[in-house]
Length: 505
Ligand code: NAD
Image (cartoon, rainbow, N blue to C red):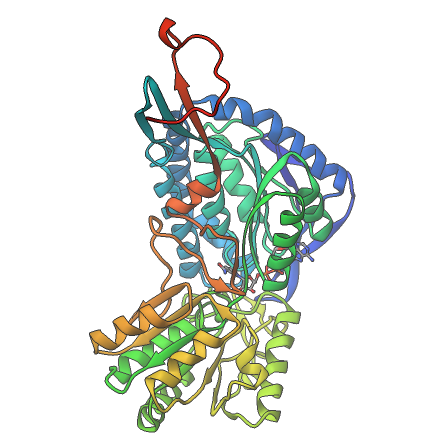
C-alpha cells in the first residue's frame, strides 16, 4: 500500500518514527494508503529546514516571491483535475466540489500576488526638526499552519499564500485524514521555483502539533479545526507569547422572513445544508422561519426536495453529495438523530434509512462506505443538543420563531458565531439584521457567505480565537510584524548629549 510521506527540503521525507495511520477511501470504507506520522525529532528536522530556508526567501524582493507564486497558481490550474480527483477520493466530497475547494484556495494565492502593495510601510517626514519616522512590515520568520480535513486544499492555501508572499517559511501540518493534496501542492510550489524548505509539509496528530507549539523557532500558528482544539492551541500559544489565529466550529443559522421567495430559499437551503455532506464550517444547519405560515410552507418545500437528493460515490457525476469522512463521523451524526428524537423534535427525514447495501460504482460495492442520508427535524428548541452542538453532517434543524427579534436572538446568543444568513425581500430588515446579529460573517439572500479573497474570513465567539482574520489584508498583518524607525541625521547644530526627554515643538 502506498505511503504518503512528509515533504521536507523539496523532497519526500519518510521520518524516523515508523508510525503510520491508514488513509481511507470514505466511499468504499476501505484504506487506500497510509500516512507517515512525525515524531518530535522529525518536527525538529522540519523546523531546522524551514529556518535555514527562510532568510534567503525573505531577502528576495516581494515581486520575485510573487512571480514564483504566480507560476505556482498556473501549475495548480494545470493539475486541477488530478488534484481534485485525489481530494475527492480521500475526503469524499464530489469532484466539482473538490474543484471548488482548490479554486477558493487559488483565489487567496491570487490575492497574495499583491504582496508588494500589502507590505508597504508608512512614512512621516519632519515629525520633529530634521526627524523622520517610517514603518516597515517584516516577516515573522518560520510559521506553521494546522489545518482540518474538510478543506484540504483551500485552507492550507489560505494560510500558505499570504505567509509565503510576506517572506515567511511555512510548515503545513494538514489533517492526517486527507494528506495527499497538501503534499502535492508543496511539490508544485517547488516545481514553480520555490526554494526547498520554504514550504514543508509534515503529518501527525497531537504530538506533532505540540512540538510545533513548543518550538522557540516557530513564531506564529494559524489553526483551523474544531473549537476545543482551537482554544487549546490559542491558550498554549499565548502562554509562550506566540502569535496565533485559531478558527473553530460552527452552527450557522438561516433566518427566513415571510416575504422571502420560499421555493428559491428551499433550493438554496437544501444545497447549503446537505452539500459536501454538511462537512463545511459554513454549512447551514439551522433554519429559523419567522411565523407559522412561513415555517409550514418552507417545511413542505424542503421536504419535497429531499427525496430527489442523490447520495453516492464521490466521483459519481450523479452524486449530489458523497460519504462522511469516517465511520466515527457517520456514527456521530446518526447518534444525533436518536438524540433529536428522544428530546421531542419531529423527525421528518431520517438519514439512517439510506440503504447502500446493493449500491456500487465502477464495479466496487459502496455497502461499507460512510454514507448517511439527509436528516431534517422540525420543532427543534434551543435547549436540545441537536441545536446546541455542531453535528457536521447532512442534518438540518428547524427552529420556529414568531418575530424577527426572536429569530435574531438565536444566532446572537448561540455559542458559535461563524456564519449566518437572512432570506427576505425587505432591504431595511436585512440591513438592520446585518448590523445587529452577533456573528462574524453574514449573508443576505446568500446561504454560505464565504467572503471573497480580498475581504477577510473569520467567525466570532467560539468560532474564532485571535484578533486577525484569514485572507484579505488581515492575513498580511498576521504574518508580519511592524517595525517603526525614527531617524535623524546628525549635523553640527544638534551635536552633543541630551539629558531630558526630547519633545516636539
Ligand atoms: P480537528 O480539530 O479534529 O483537527 C484539526 C487539526 O488539528 C488537524 O490537523 C488535526 O490533526 C489537529 N488535531 C486534532 N486533534 C488534536 C489535538 N488533540 N491536539 C493538537 N492538534 C490536534 O478538526 P477536523 O475534524 O479536521 O475539522 C472539522 C472542524 O473544523 C469542524 O469543527 C469545523 O467547523 C472546523 N472548521 C472551521 C473552519 C473555520 O473557518 N471556522 C473551517 C473549516 C473547518
